Every structure is written in structure tokens, then in C-alpha cells.
Amino acid sequence: MKIKNILYIAALGLTATACTDGNDWSVDSAFDRLFGVNSDKISVTAEDLTAEVTFNSIKGAEYYIIEVSTDSLYDEVEMGGSHSKVYGTNKEVTTSPYTLEGLVGDTRYYLRMKSMADGKNDSKWCYYKSGQTFKTKAEQIFYEITDADRFEDHIDLKWNAEMEATNIVVICAEEEIQNITLDANAKAAGEITVSGLNPSTAYTFIIYNGEAKRGTLSTSTTAAMPAGDFKIQLPATMERLDQTIIDDAVAEAQAAVGATNISITIGIPAGLVIDAYGDGTEGPAGLTLPDGVSVTFFGLPGGDAPVLNIVKSINIKGGRGYLRFENINFTDGGCQYLINQSADATISEDLTFTQCRFEGFERSVIRTQGSPVITIGSINLDNCVLTNMSRGNGYSVFLFKLDTPANQDIGSLNLNNCTFDTAQRSFIETSASPLKNGITITNCTFYNVIQSGRYLIDANGQPTNITLKNTILGKTYIDTAKGVRTAGTISVENCLRTSDCIFASNDLKELPKGDVSSADVFADPDNHDFTLKINDRIGDPRWFPVEE
Image (cartoon, rainbow, N blue to C red):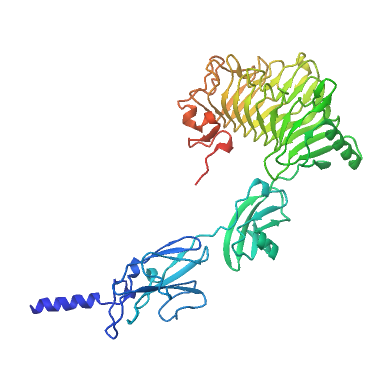
């Protein structure tokens, strides 16, 4: 019996320790003190402005006091310091869990708590994880930035005006370049324009309330209007792009520059959906670009890309250094061809489409016909999408077929970072004369192209060299489609051809079809979603899955 008593007393001595040692309860022989909660059983789930505290209940405790502080907490620190918040003094913290409100985002806090009851001595302080901290999540009072908020030299920022804020810091290349104090108007509206920015540049914006960070956004400014001797911005009230507008813009530019052979950039306001055609004696005529004038048509930022509904094909007769289209969507308003050239034309440098979309053209993007003399340095498409082209087995998407082949002098056709989704004819046809510097297709995605008996690329014995790099050839429109014919060379590098890309003849032997179908490669190709399901980062980069 004596041995048992000794063991029992020893056990009491081991368990009757202070809360700060991490046990479930404590005993102070000098006072009738409540037990404290177990420090090891205090857990915190933090959000941006709140934190849920879970703890074990103590018998005899009527409520609890919880204190958090951005300064260290220990027994010698009095409760309610200048950097702390105290919860439960009104006896409201009675059960677990309890949510602490009014915290600051992206901030580390120390936490301690004690048990309380009327008529009894409160417990000793018990500390979260033996004095460690928890951290709130970063707060976000900014609203999402849309295309309508981004410009080449400024960004419009908006935030929840009900949340207090004092200033916004602008960071570029990890350096603070602006610190904007918010005035009363900005605070009331919850919005401000950050000016003095550079085109095509990434910025980070941080909104503060005093020292507390309340939100962070990263975005980039848009590209600047392309360079030119003269820049013109068309009015947002424009209802139609017609010949008078083109002629007036060119005349204004020539007068300002003092020359006739000039380059101009015409900015088309974002969000416009307008018809494009000139007046003719027997109905709409194609817009004709003045001789000697290089033109860039540029879709301005601030919303969706403008849509040009082409009622009659654009006429590129005459001579110029270049013709470029950027950030513009094209639809077929009856034209059937975007460019259907039968008159002499010279573009010494390039005909280029950048970040454009083409949809629903009955026949071709570019067609040459008849016996004109046509010289083009290069034809380029970059970061474009072409959907539902050559509808009804019309003409090839790109068709170069002059009656006098020697009159054609086109350097190259270059397709880069593009998606070609559904076309019911040959894709490229240059059967009358070669593209002297060949066809290069890089980082492109093809799906549902080529009608029965037609070709992916038809050079019809011409010495046109063809290069395919990092490109996916998906399902053909029909399994009686044909592949490639040319007297030139064919080079294939790091490309993928799906099992349902079937060429009944003129097979592309340099790229045999694989074992996986388009459904295995793309997320939902029949609904125009070509997001990759495979690990290879190949094809049009717009469809690469987001890396986590």
C-alpha cells in the first residue's frame, strides 16, 4: 500500500504543471485558479481580415480572453498594448471555435488566451504554439482589371470604396516608381488612373491603408500604336469605315508630313463593330489604299478588338512599303475574300496580320487572280485565329493563282502562333507559281481543315519549300483529304499529327500520323477549345495549360 501511495503522489506531481508547459491544466497551490486551455490544442485558421481560433473548453470557465498582437507576447507584457487587439472582455467568447474579426491582411500575429469566471481567479496565459505566430492571408480590395482598363500609357484601377485606403504604390522591375496618395475624390469613388507608364510593360500595384497592405494586382500596359510618319485616331462614333475616311486621313497625314510617300497608322477605337466598304457606281466598292502610302490599321486598347465587317474586298493596287493590320477582327459581310487582287500591286516589305481573328469567310483571306503584276516581300500571320473559313468548299484560304505565273513575285508565307479551325477547301494553294522563299508554319494548331480531294498545301509541282515546326495537325475535315504536293523540300521539326489527321493521298510522309486522336490531345475541339491535354507544349501557345 505504501508503494502505491508513493506512485500516486508522484503522478500528481508530474501532471500538476503550468499551462505554459503545454499540459491540459495547471495547478497553482497559492491560489484557487482556473485551469488554462492546452496550448497544443489552440489552432488558428486565418483568412485576410479574420481568423478562427479553436481551443479545448475548460470546466468551470464562463468565458475566455483572447489577445493578438503584432508584437511579441509573454507573461510580463500587460494586456492591451498599442499593437494588440483583445477579444472577450465583454464575456462574448464562451465556446470554441471563435472568429477574430478586424485583423489586417498579410500580417503576422502572436496569440495568447486565458480562462475566466466570476468569483474565481483567471488562469495563467496560454500561448499559441509556445509563442509562435500565425499569418493572415493577403487582402484583396482591388477589383479585377479588364481590357477596358488597360492602355499604352496608363492603367485604370478600381477597388471597394467601402474599404479604407491611403495610397497606392506602383512597382516596375522590382523597383518602386510611384507612390500615389489618394485624395478624397479617389477614396469616395474607389478608382484612380495611374499615368506616366510605358507601353507593353508589366506593373504591380499595391494599395495600402497606412502600413497595412490591402490588395495587390499585376498587369501590363498595351502595345503602343505602331510607328508611322503620322498617327490618326478615328472617332468612337464612327459608323462605317469608308473611302472618304481613308482618303481624308491620308490627306491630313500628307499635309502634316509634307510628302506624298509616307507611312501612317490609323487607330480604330476598341469595341466598334462597323462595316468596311467604299461607294461604287453599281453598289459597294472595295476600299482602295492610296498609292505610295504604307498603312497600319491598329485596333486601339480599352475593350474588345474592333470588328471590321468587310462588305467588299480591300484593294491593294498601286505600290507601298507595307500594309499591316493589328488587333482587329474580320468578318465576311459579303466580300467572300478579304483581299481579292486582280490589279497590279506592290508591297515591297510585308503584308502582315498580328493578333487578328478571321471568321466565316466564304472563300479566301488572300487571293491573287488574272494577269496583274503582284509583288509582295512576305505575307505574315502572327498570333491569329481563323475559324470557319472557305465555307461550302469555296476557294482555298490562301490562294495564289495568276493566269500569267511569271507575274507573281511573292517572297514567303509565314504562319506563326496561329490556330486554323475548320476550312473546307485546300488550306494553301500556290499552284501557278512558287513562293520563292517558301512556306513556314511555326507553333500552329490545325483542326477540321481540308475538304474531300483538296490539299493541306498544294504547290502543284512548283519548287516551293515547306517547313513545319512545333505544329499540331489535328483531325482533317474528311478522310478523303490530301496531304502536301510540292517540287520543293519538306522539313518537319517537333510536330504532332493525330490519328484522325488522314490524308488519302499525297501523304505527309515526313510526319506520319500518331496513335492519339484529337480528342486525346485537345480539351474540347468540336467546341473550339484546343487547350492541351498532353504534357508537350506544342502548337499555338494560346492553348498551353496554365502552369500551377
